[in-house]
Image 1 (cartoon, one colour):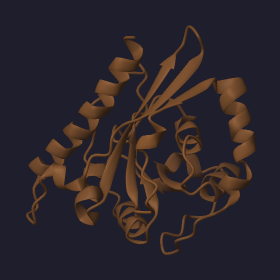
Image 2 (cartoon, one colour; image 1 turned 90 degrees about the horizontal axis):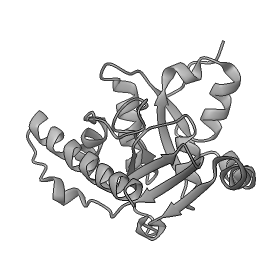
Image 3 (tube, helix red, strand yellow; image 1 turned 180 degrees about the horizontal axis):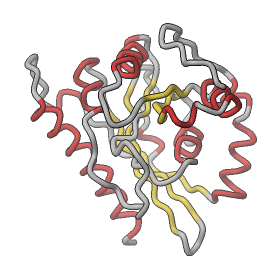
Image 4 (tube, one colour; image 1 turned 45 degrees about the horizontal axis):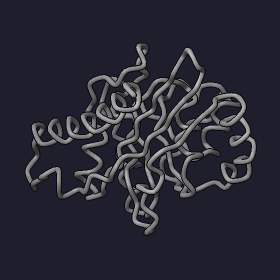
Length: 211
């Protein structure tokens, strides 16, 4: 039985850095990953929310390996039930979230990570797309962006099943000011922000797959 995740502890493990060579090998020889738009990922040290579409369990690996800054990933809590998987996820700077409801602990943890200057990755769709196409997003990433004032970088993950290749495209940063957030509690604001994020992801996904 895996230990319950401690949301009161904020650590950034270096295990991910130590195993990057293994990840690079898998990317090249197994996943066949190509990266585009890496120059769009900020290098000024300001924390950012990374928002990829979700098509596979390997998405966190391929997204994280494309850039140098460490990224903390929000992952479904079911993955943490196995002790070995839980250890590996935690030491790769991932934390659990309960899906289907507002997980206060995960949200607070996300906000605090940004406040501590850490990069945070949230899959806006909340679950994997079986069709491989970007789906409608949920408001979790937008909520964290509003609470923290952090910018967002959309990421499109495109898989060509025939060629067995994956392309990861880092889009242009969406400045927090572009979302038009106010001090009011507004679901409409979050919905519009989520739509903007998913529209940017979908546009990159379609452009990549339609070439």
